[in-house]
Image 1: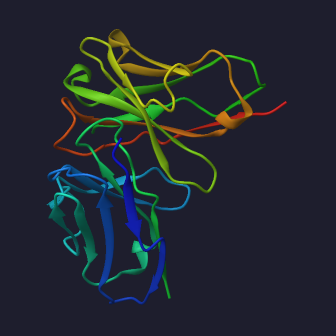
Image 2: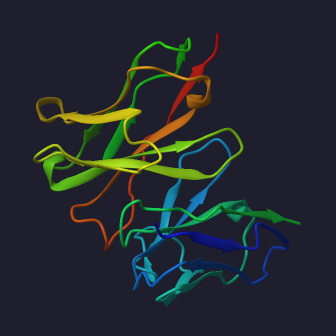
Length: 107
Length: 121
């Protein structure tokens, strides 16, 4: 089974900061990598699919990059509403594993 | 609008059976797969398995294989997650989500609102 590892597990940043979250796969998953945002008490929301494609309706400050085993989610200018937990997920092969999550706090 | 609406919270005792549901609307039900996921309190997301509503073919995470059953009713565009014997460790929020047929390219979108299952004696 493919394992997904995110870093950091938590971070704190200020409004306007540039934030990066890293996700690493235990084997090559090509570009079959998705990013989700989950706010407290809510269902996850798809932000990025296929490593770099922005889901319609998602603000352009969210970008994804990478392929193979290394991926990055970048928030270019942090907003207060970005406070949430972020998860990566591989859909290269079942079981479709998620990373352990990165909790983002706004200072 | 594409929507997945899940059934309400459940409180059960260990050893009991349970079926929760996920009703889809706003798209052709058989054109997309449905997955189920688990989120235990304060923990991350776990993929449990998926079903192709067009032929009811299922694929399970080995961690959940044999403990849950995923099914669909095409006539009502509803997917189900079933337990025959609940354990206290099944206490969690369960989500359904739609994703493109064939897996791979494309993420899970949308998600249902989640169903809280509490198993306690």
